Length: 103
Image (cartoon, rainbow, N blue to C red):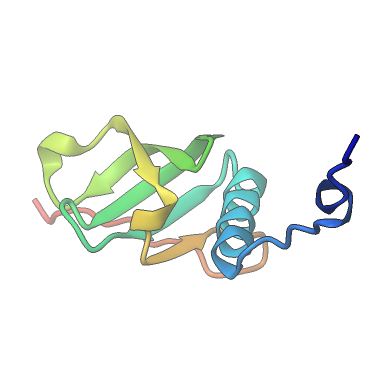
């Protein structure tokens, strides 16, 4: 009987992309309940709101401000691969400004 020894000695090393994705997921999980600003390369481009949860590799944001008023005050699920830039408010660090139209 021939045994498959390769299965016992094979080591799998995560790729740089896997490590990057896991770090982003961890960062958003640590930010649940905090305000976040997210920029994406596709419409609606900007999300400002509170992180509600992280589901797999998606961050769910209760969006208060975006580029289109009709899309505000809703929960958006943003895939981490679509996030170009983000900022999660931290104690002692600058706050995300409130963006309001002058009336």
